[in-house]
Image 1 (tube, rainbow, N blue to C red):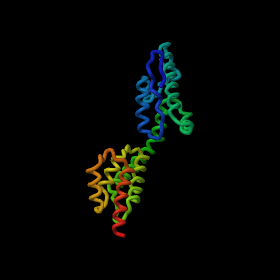
Image 2: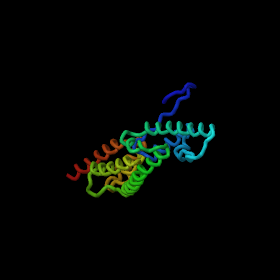
Image 3: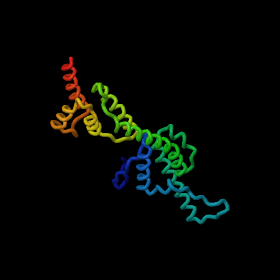
Image 4: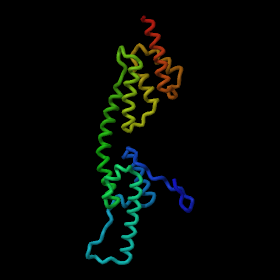
Length: 208
C-alpha cells in the first residue's frame, strides 16, 4: 500500500487472480473510494461537433478525460499482459469494464454450474462396501479439491465431518470412538485417515 502526503495509506489496486466476481466487487469498491466509479458505469459525454462549449464545460470535459485515463491505468495494472492485449483498443473505462464483464461472465457461469454439480456429488458420496480407506479418501479429496478450484471455500473440518458420517457400517464403532475422544473441529484430514487406517489394518488382520 502507498501513502499520500497526509500519511493516509492508500489501498492496493486489486489484482485479477482468476476469480472475476470477487475481483469486480473489490475493484468497484476501490474506484468508489476514489470517486471514480461513475466512469465505469457511464460513457464520457462528448459534445456534438457543432456545439460551442463554454470555458467551464471544456474544463469539466477535460477533467473527466483525465480521470478516465487514471482509471484506465488502474485497470491496466490490475490485469495480466494477456488480458491487457485484448482491451488496449478500448477507448474508455466503461468500454474496458464492459469488455471484461463480457469476457469473464461466461467463464463464471460455467464455474458455477460445475460447482453445483460437484456439490451434489460431494453430498451423495459415501464409502463403498469393500472399499479401502485410502481409496475412499482419494475419491473424497479429488472432489473437494475440484470444488476449491472452482471457488468453493471449503475448510478441512467440512471434509472430516463428511467422511465420519459416510463410512460403511463396520466403521461405526471407530467413528463413535473418534468423535468421543477427539475434537472433530481440530482434527486434520491426515490424522483422521491415520486413525481409520490403523483400525482397518486391525480388521484385516483379524480376518486373516
